[in-house]
Structures are given as C-alpha cells and as structure tokens.
Length: 162
Image (cartoon, rainbow, N blue to C red; front, side, top):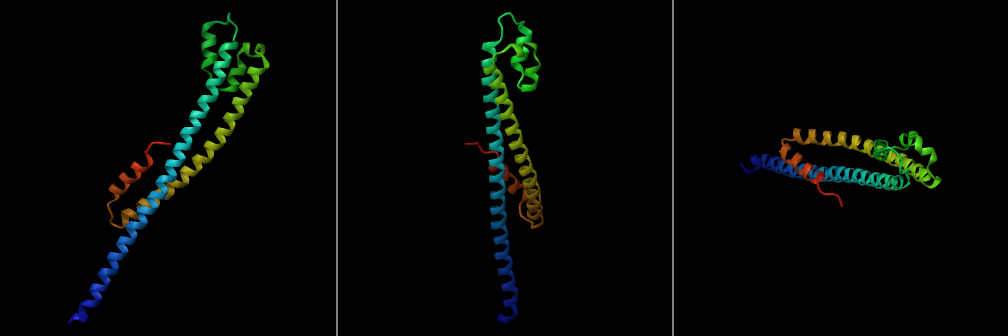
C-alpha cells in the first residue's frame, strides 16, 4: 500500500520544489529588471541635471554680457531660451564677445552628446520593457500573486537615486 502512494508523494514533492524554484527565479529576474530600470532612470535624471547646469552657466554669462539698453522683454526671452540655435537668432548675439559664443557652442555640443546618450537609454528602456512584460506574463501564468510582484517591482524602480 505504501508503494501505491509513493508516486503521488514524489510528484507532489517535485511540484513543490518546482514552484519554489520558479518563485526564486521570478524574484531574481524581477530584481535584475528593476535594478536595471532604476539605473537607467537615475542616469536620465543625472543627465537632466547636467543639462540644467550647462544652460544655467550659459544664461549666467549671457546675463552679464547683454547690453544694458536691451529691451527687458527681449532680454528675458533670450535668457529663457535653452537652445543654441535659438540664442543665435537674436540680433544681439552677433555683437557678443567670442567667449560667450564659445560657451554657447560648448553647450550645444554638450546637448548633442546628452541627446545621443538619452536615445541609447530610451532604447535600453524599451528592450527592458519587453523583457518585463514577458516576465510578468510568465508570473501570471504560473498562478503566483502577480500584483504582489508588480508592487515589489515598482518599489524597487521608484527608489531614490544616489
């Protein structure tokens, strides 16, 4: 009689071990995806801060060099622009000294590099999103608590950047 139940007991043990292994694998894969997404999002934040710093420096130098008799509205508009090509369109630009023009050119170069990096990060996020969706589909199909995994994922991704 014991031999009759042995296959049932063994298959139950195998299913339990497999369920535990799947849970561990899901958690490991979620951790990997979430930490990678968090890293990418933090990198994007750092690039945004870098862009702001570059343009704050340009605006500060421009503010010091713009003519005193420049109309206030035009000055305010020029200082609000954070785009080298638009800054160059202001009539007063041609009369500014070469150092400020070089600063604007450097800001434009920094912008181009940042945009290139942001495009790469966006591609990484898109690939990661596909991987995440596939993983959530696997979790859902395995009868594991999907909302709990999604909450865990969001908590990992939304953590503060260093």
